[in-house]
Image 1: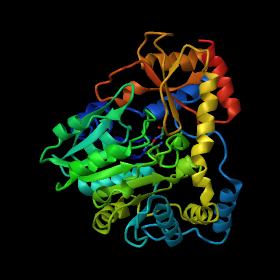
Image 2: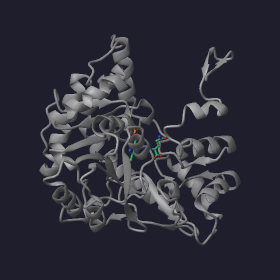
Image 3: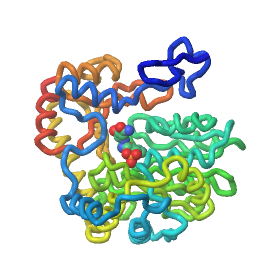
Image 4: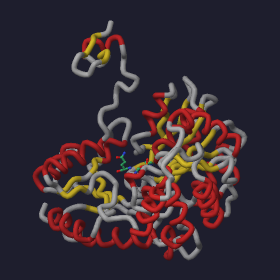
Length: 407
Ligand code: PMP
Ligand code: GLN
């Protein structure tokens, strides 16, 4: 039973009556909170600290390289796995930072954002009935990706207020059906960072299993207070550093976060050859390849300015500290933020509304948009915590601070 839609000149499957014939594959999914809050911010002219993206420009040198490569003719399909110079630059960076060797030819693939890399890794590995362990609060794309491929998400908890993994809980969740574990450090939305001990626990737990790991490391260059550690313990603990993880992991990072170009949607995935082989089988039919001139430009920029990524942590740490100063004297209570460009805050002293309601009023009545953290919890658990993005110019953060202090 279909109905011809003369407006769009196609068969209309989405008529509410006809959904009986096309049951949704994602019945519990609506529009993402990032889209909802950015739209609300735009409608009300609010300062948008909700969706995570910078309000400042990327380096002009990087932009010059894109126009250069477009003018020079890089306007047709690049190789399926990504341009060679970019894959080489990625492999060199990973070797320099994490002492891990990946073959650019067979173990590095450029993707259309981290979202596509994560989805593709799931699609390549997860079969109907498989279980995938994720950590809640959980980044919003993981569970729909698992469910679209017939898997079941199983939730471990990063408990408020520290958001650290509970390894006894994780151990108890592993079953013979566990196909995959998805981890994310530095963690969105909490800003917590996994320690070397956490990684060693995971490494020990998956030893002698068939579990594959997806390690979402899109904020790999945004880890704070590294100088305070002294013992070298506060640093980004990439899965690539741990042989027992490296051998079974898809490691994902995003140029969007590192080079202030979230709208370019260029990222990459690393994996050992056999896993990458399966990944590419899916990748070639999900997206085939990624924007050609942007890849060449990123390769040039990485080569010419390796210091850019190295300086990112101090760049964002200054923004975190500036934003926190702005909130001094407000009734928000700030949670520790060890990485990412997100700051969590509780608002219990201001209101006892649910966080989803509070962020709406914050946007429409007080002119600052934020993200409610409960939407990242599978059961909607609400600790009255909201997330602010501080990847903004100081003027934006100062203007937001003034409004937030007035509450
Ligand atoms: N993972 C996490 C934890 C993220 O925060 C984001 C986006 N901010 C992504 C994945 C997706 O990255 P991309 O925009 O490169 O798809
Ligand atoms: N990852 C970004 C955030 O956490 C949003 C990306 C998106 O809108 N899909 O805010």
